[in-house]
Amino acid sequence: SKVRIYTLAKDLGVENQRMLEILDGLGVSYKSVSSTIEEETVDLIKQILAEESTEAATETVAAEAAPAVSAPEAPAKAGSDDVAPVASSEAPAASATAEIPHRAPVVTIMGHVDHGKTSLLDYIRKTKVAAKEAGGITQHVGAFEAQTSKGRIVFIDTPGHEAFTTIRARGANVADIAIIVIAADDSLMPQTREAIAHAQAAKVPMIIAINKVDLPQADPDRVKTDLTQLNLVPEEYGGDLVVVPVSAKTGEGVEELLEYISLTAELEDLRADPKAAFGGVIIEGRVDRQQGVLATVMVQEGTLHVGDFLVVGENYGKIKAMNDSNGARIKEAGPSTPVQILGFSDVPNSGEKVASAKNEHAAREVVASRQSDRRDVENARVQRRKTLEEMMGPLSEDRTVNLIVRADSQGSVEAIQGILARKETDAVKLNVMLAGIGAPTEGDVLLASTAEAHILCFSVTAPAGVKKIADNKGIDLKSFRIIYEMIDEVDRLIKGNLEPVF
Ligand code: GDP
Image (cartoon, rainbow, N blue to C red; front, side, top):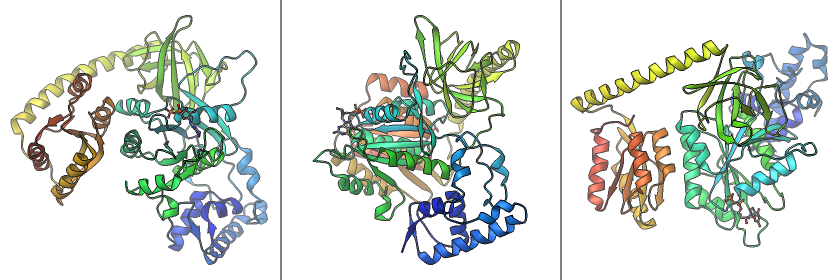
């Protein structure tokens, strides 16, 4: 009978990644680790692994215990996720990257309002975060660490794609995996599509959590069919999209969701060196009346220590004290750890990159050089804009024009998409990242700025605030009342006769 790839990997005690390599080697096609394979293939895989372990046996006696079911589980489970898995006796040969330890995945939860993002985060926090010491106060610091049977998972706990987008808009990528929550009684809604567009633009793997399956009116199949219409095909329909039915109310499916997160993380092969130079991102910053400026930093590379000097943008500070996301005082923090830091004098913005400096003098120098760099860049930008305006020639061939379309009704949206599809040529692809009903939002502008997209509005206008942000960021945002004018604009974009967005 057929066997799922990840089940087999687990039974044989090898990493999923290794399993996929073997399948590639055998020329067996699969969609993902949850695809099933034939019994003959299973036999072949067992043979290959057995051969490998005999080869390894010359070096390690232990290897003789080889591919017996579940034998090697112990080393895999014993290590924490922060420690490189002890080179399993079955591993063919230590690969080059094996020296850089694995790190825990950082997950963000996005989706339409009221679909259950907060509830899902609360459920996970309630059941998977180690109990605080008596008297400890649960504080929202923007992220928390869940301990699961498959290891640590870090959740960004500002639900919604605003956090995701502001962080990305500053050039940082903090999330490794995006969970898109879709309520089973409501299916795909405008913000669901937005969330999907954001995850796709960031090239972050997505897992769909169909929430509220406890409700009598829940219709998970409808959600799956609707997803298919966005070219997102669930695994059970032959695609590679992982879809997990859950209930944030009863907890049903949450364990499975966490397993899928770990599985996806394993495939992404996330690693970071705790000994490397420190690098991190601000998750959020705020002022506390008693303590002063508090900033949550996600450690991405290297290790932070109390006393380190940090540089954020054109500011620096010294770490006076550091808390983990549970509120416990800590002295150091390695990769994929969110920490709350006391020691900045200004509130840093979320998404800003953080680096460390050897001492105060070095920190000051970094700040000074950044200030002068910024002035140079500003001058250069003015210069470049001028020259481009002089040339205004065709910029490049064979390019993709990213578009965000906003219109007053579903009918208009579909009509515009139809027109755009016909306009596409071999040389110029029109990529509609997001097509939605209603006025463009700040989120659209942020998406446009990270993806260098043009925003085209039909019969809707941008609110003044949104228009202003677009202007500040140099985003091309135009509104049209007459469809032919919009088509003319698209033609202009296709001809590449427009100044590019920078
Ligand atoms: P958010 O806006 O996406 O963060 O959604 P919330 O977490 O605030 O949930 C919106 C509403 O749906 C609240 O009233 C929740 O109690 C309810 N809700 C969330 N998850 C579930 C679920 O799994 N089952 C049921 N029955 N209700 C849920």
